[in-house]
Image (tube, rainbow, N blue to C red; front, side):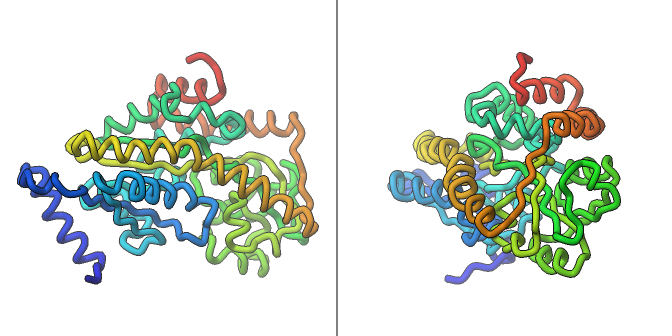
Length: 346
């Protein structure tokens, strides 16, 4: 049977209502429970998709007698913008989402992309693993809005750096002034503007031509985007300043999650533990460090490491970005989250 978005939203909406009213028969629990999960990321991003597909395979292969997952990647069922509303409506059971995409709706997730913080968080992934004080804080805050985060991948992905063209090289903070830079997140936008750059929102699918034609001088991007879109063919240098970052999380609606049987939750959590251990680690180490960076350097990419003074200057100038975020999540929560991310006692 072919499923489309309209039919899916109608059918699963009715099922969600039936579940809420307790209309499942006892016989239904004799069979493996079917769960629907989504991500907008395509399999072609093998680095970022490794964790999500691995989670699905783990649950289906090792716990298929309890739970079976119907998984829709590439936005085939729901677009990136549709995922969170669908999760809240109960029309899907769980979603994978990049944190940077939903920080406007779920501001606590902004901790994974704060300028001046992400460098430390990347170097110390244990600070975001399940069970850590920072993860627990994020989980507690999300529950206030009816959502539960099961994992954030065991850490953030390698930070987004500044990749610039041959004609408009950016090798220092001062070089940002007057340049047009492609950005995605709110946090990156503010940081670039603070140094006199013009932030331009361009989807990754259009980035190659934008850099080729000079529409933008540079891009703030994760190396996965660079490799996936072959941007290294247009970028002559990369300034490895950790501007912003993101993680990939597994999210569920709290009420729906708690209504699942203990057996189903245990099956899911077995997959979650695998995801927490492998998602960010494999992407960062096995793909980015072991494959992409060596290939880029061999192809002639100039890699500029920022000095400690530049990193500290960037952190100081981007203070207003962090303060704006603290204003969104609340002073106590915001300061505690930053302290935990920076390895300080909170």
